[in-house]
Each structure stands twice: as C-alpha cells, then as structure tokens.
Image (cartoon, helix red, strand yellow):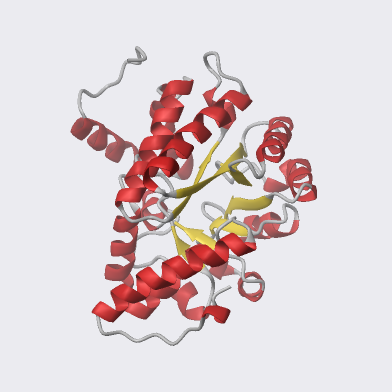
Length: 324
C-alpha cells in the first residue's frame, strides 16, 4: 500500500529473509534488519495499525501488560514529526486497550550512534508525554564506540522530570557499559545485561538494588551476545536472586513471541512451575507503572498464575505483602 519494494512476496518468504539476516551475526549487522521494517513505518496510519496489531497479538497470548519501545526519530522520512509518531502509536495502542482490555505503555528510545542533541530532543518528548502513554526513556543501539555517558544530558532531563529509565547495556559490550548505564544514566532497569556476570561487584550492586534485567534469549543468541541458549546466563542470574525478566526484544526480526521465550526458558533451563511464577512476577514487579496500579496488576497476575499452578498441583505460599 505504501509503494515500498521488498525482496519477498509473502509472509513465509519474509520470515526466511529475516532469519538469514539475523542468524549468528554481530549486533550492528542484526540492527540493519530494521531498515526493512522502518521502510513501511513512515506514515501515521501504518504506525497506528502496527501498534494496534502488536497489542492485539500480545492479548492473544494472554499478555496483561506490555511496554512497547521505539525511536520516533526513525519515522520521519515522510510527513511525520516527533509528536506525530507518538500520537499515532498511542492511538493504535489505545484502540487495542479499548477493544481487548490489554494495558500498554510506551518507552521512547534514543539511539547511541545518533547525536546526543537528538537524544535530548527525545528526552523532552518523553517528558511531554509522561503520564499520557509514555512510561519511560531508553538508549538503544550498538554499544561499542558509542558510550551511554555521551547522552548523559538526556538522562538528566528525564530523571529530573520523574520519567523512568532503562538502558540497553552489557549486550555486546562488557560490564563497563552496565556501570555507565547505572551511574551516569541512572538506569532503573538494564536491557539485556548478558555480560553482567563478568563483574561480581556490579552484579551484587544490581541484585542489592533490585534492578531488573530485561533478558531476551532468542535475540541474544542471534546477535552472539551469548554463544548458545545453554550458555545464556539467565539461569545463573535467577539462582542468584537477580530480578530477571523475559522479553521478546523484536518479535518480527527475531521471529519470536512471549510464549516462545517462556517455552525456550523452561526447556533450556529446566525451570519448574515455581521458577516460572517467579520470572513472570518479576516482569510485573519491574513494570514502569505507578505503585497502586502495579499492585492491581500483580494481584491479577497472581490469581491467574496460581490458578495454573493449582491445576499442576503446585502450592505456593508467597503473600501479597511480599509481592511489591
């Protein structure tokens, strides 16, 4: 409909094409796959439709709450401006919420290799929409040669305005990247963090301060952040008590869903029902939502999860007071 020429003719060909682009490549090469998706996301109608369909698909997986992150500055090749991209995405998510009851929030992303000045503009955008659908600010993109501390002014801006912060760190670069995210950018969560275990002191800091890790198993193997699923540090972090969460990273590019990621974790790390319960609740505990709202989400989640556990004849003893 948008006149974009693709190298594929149908959905199956598209999946195979993306699989070739993303299998066993470096993070910068993996990120080039987004050129394809961005080409068809330059109009408000397209952004609104894709946002709606993303939430619709998540609802069909029984997702209660979803955070969607993107960089509005990558959608300006036609007539949109920064505010127009946010408005379009929020319209799509709002319609999905109205129709299906799924709760959503969006996270505005700066990009490491783009200018810190642009990150500051995006930080101002996040502040402008805080409480109106935007729940956080992030910094994504290739870590090597693009330190997070270069974007410190943007993080100062959002933190002074009480906006939540997450930072992609420790995925393709070492624990020094995580330390920058924590101590220069004030991160409340860490995206990926696969290399956190290389620095025991930083791992202890993350654990002691209950800083969640947004872990993405399929994506991490595809980008060689970890050599295989079996080598992924997810299980070790979970055993140490780190607040690990499961995420898709990129549903289309990585050809995955939350169901796939959970199945992969259970099968690879031999998670028992109590482990699964903990991981799922970690996600709700880590959500960028107000305290009272988070309590309601947790209670809803606990009821649904424990019903499934009872079907498996697994008893739980955690009280509601211990959930927050």
